[in-house]
Amino acid sequence: MIVTIARVTDPDRFLEVFTTIGAEKRREHGCRSARVYFDPDDAHRVWSFFDWDAQDYDGFLADPEVPAIARELGLQAPPVHAVAATELDA
Image (tube, rainbow, N blue to C red; front, side, top):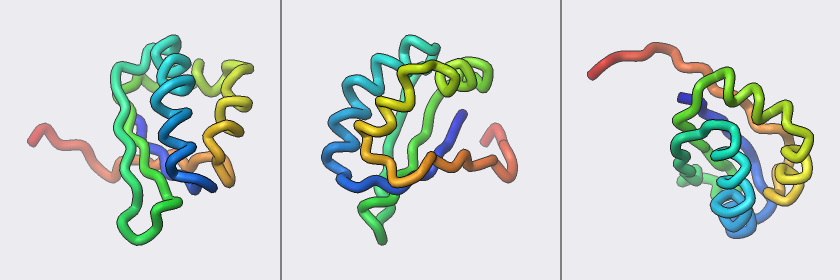
């Protein structure tokens, strides 16, 4: 599981790109699924959860096409990778 937090300029535009071009590129790099949540106190703050192996995620980040997609997403800064405090089976 990969979790990122980012600020976006336009939440609707973010979802449009995330669900189309972004999804295609993530699939290309082995992402199995993704969920997006908007912070209830700030619609421009986005939490993204990915079912993705770390190695495949690193390959995605190294893809030379990803920076252009990030610009289309309207990210105000690079996403922050949230690290799990713990992992439990229930």
